[in-house]
Image 1 (cartoon, rainbow, N blue to C red):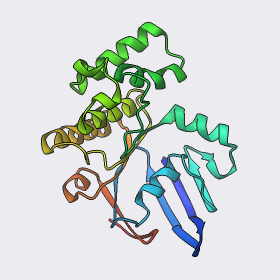
Image 2: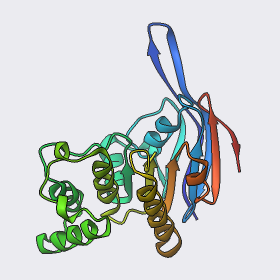
Image 3: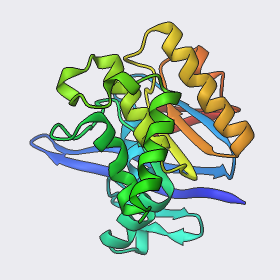
Image 4: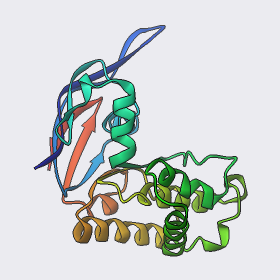
Length: 225
């Protein structure tokens, strides 16, 4: 069964110099339970593609099907609901809510899932422990180092146990030991819990944790290994 598929996805923006194409005729299929790495030079469209797959960005042409739903035909609220129910997203720039503590940031996605308060607290406690950030739970994002913010962002993405995890340079702000630990967590989630994972990475080593590599260049897929 496919988790998602795209058919000739094209996205552009208009600038003072005319139309700038960010993605061009992207055709890809990701099977349920795959762990895929997307690679390519800076400016090749990797993050843009991830945002489109995560329904955070629109596209101009083409078709996108996610878990049997035609995303290109859905209204924005339907897309938002589909994202919140099924997708965990790890951002390069963290995207933590500054006004909330680490624990409150982690709890926020669970509120949407209508989890009871006692269950939410237990779930947050578990994931704080898993990522060794229990001591940071009452701090605000600005009080954390970049690496700690990244760990909190990863924990938040995983707390809902998403069917699809999208990760944009997930280890970019971590030291090598933390980075390896995160990749091991991803491997466990993929192999033991069947979570589908798509990561954008510059690291050949991190890409090797996946079972397939998709290379982008100038917004186009140039090969899929």
